[in-house]
Length: 235
Image (cartoon, rainbow, N blue to C red; front, side):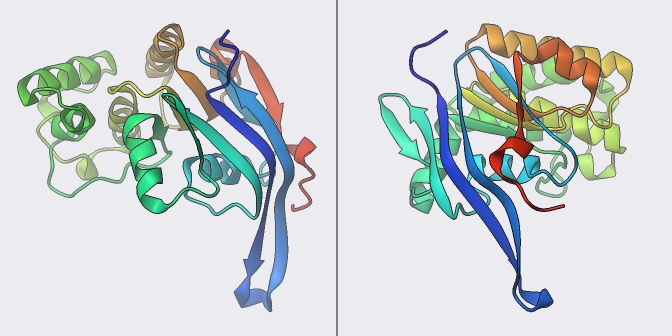
């Protein structure tokens, strides 16, 4: 294991203010802290409402942090997501931090294979090679070739999730965040995702995720962080 973490979360606190409820305050986490190293997969655990998704979104920079630091190693530089300006955060996502969300959000009328290939093209891979690799990954995830040219908005939930996984995994990013990646998948495709995650770990990728599927969590995760230990007070 590397001596320096890829991700270091320290003293992170977050409270939502409910403006439609007369400014009621809803604490999410307080004093969250942990490190994540290359080649390991760590799950955020705890019951619904514990703050798992909120914490994941704070690491990615989608939610503002009230207090604390979220440091991500980007080559020789360490970037604090909690204070980084928007352009630096965008660059960090381009080079270092990937995200597989629960829901696929893509440009309408763009075919599934092109959706998956786009991150590789952004990284400078030739379009022909990117398209080829996208097709290979979609095939591994058992998405029928007849669907590759069609826009994913027309797909079932499970088909969309496989496109989402392929897009999130196709390019190398040292840090990968995953939010319930197998929620809509059958057993065969869950097994494929487990294989893909193991391959990422062997390639030195650090993975932080929410895995409600106990079998998947036990198969890929090296440890579980109990989010309820971070002073969470909300239901």
